[in-house]
Length: 95
Image (cartoon, rainbow, N blue to C red; front, side, top):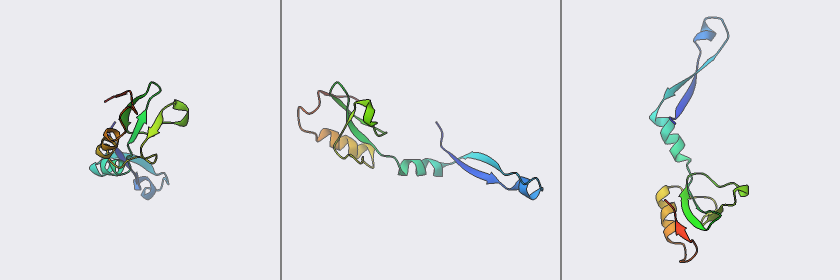
């Protein structure tokens, strides 16, 4: 999925139609903005395997967040936290 920035064109407004149009453009800034807010989580699945994921597991999913419950700013930080879990905490590591 490509990130997009939305902007409104005022062309229609200046022509007297009063309608604003919304247009999407591809932008590296959109990618940076999305990445800046990304959080990574260390989770344990229902079987006991642990992995790093890029979205917070829902409470009803049966997944358990390990380490920082607020998530990690980078995938690398989450991977370090995963490796730092006590031995035997996870049955295996996925991914």
